[in-house]
Image (cartoon, rainbow over the protein chains, first blue to last red):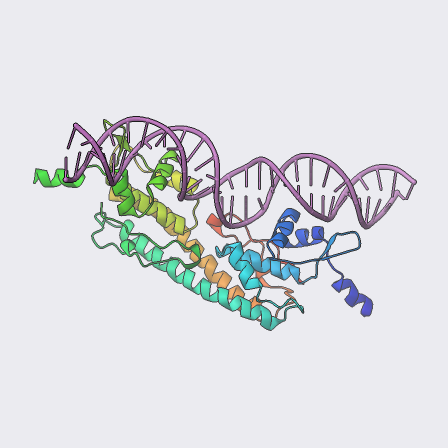
Length: 152
Length: 152
DNA sequence: GTAAAACCTCAACTTAACTTTAGGTCAACA
DNA sequence: TGTTGACCTAAAGTTAAGTTGAGGTTTTAC
């Protein structure tokens, strides 16, 4: 039993993490320089990862799919404890923020789709009061707010 | 009447396009080098734009909000006619593709949100059969497919 | 008719997120 | 015990999407 546990808690090499997470070794090095992940070193100066790094990398990738820049992901990840392996509650708190982001993004995309359908797709080429003109329709994590769309 | 029409069809300078579209002059130059927009030159070699360039720029920005890279936007825009000012039908055809993209993106985001809610947010930290492991869940225009998410 | 504002080109710089290369070290195994 | 594959660092290169700067020309406005 103890043997079994220690097998499963044996730290991972960078190559193993790369293979299991699907990112390149160079990317893991890169993430480490950015402070997104952390490692211990063995006697020969090689990286050894705790297994929860896999979840961290997974979350990085999920966040990237949401268009969140690495710097912001780093800030979010830094709320995780460094002194112990994150618990379910730790992860939950982290993902809650991104769920709100996602909800907002979905809503904005939906609005965009409706506008595209109702405005560009239709005959309102003069765009007298096209909803796409709305300058306050921002797409959160993307940063850039919509700009004024003039009549043509 | 004729005076009025010619006023409205007078070509725009790059500064006017910049102001009315909300993008920088340098960006318009840049878009032109990428073939995303086109201009005529006056006697003094200055750019003069047809008014429909505003719609083109607007569409570029909408597409960018969807995460579509400029190169792909260029391909889509190249389906517009160069020999005449695009009609409503021309624009409609173009936007139809992006509506499908949008639909797909919205669906994927929704799925992602549900997974985040149901998986990372919950206690399934061992992730034996976590939906986020699903390697076939791609985010179209983003290019990168989801990678395998290993158990930790 | 002249001065300021707007325009021109071309090249170099910027940021994000990586990848590649070079030159060396460590570890697994036959 | 040697050699091959995995690792190490540091620096340079890459792509996307622009921005900035230098040096010169055109337009516009008084």
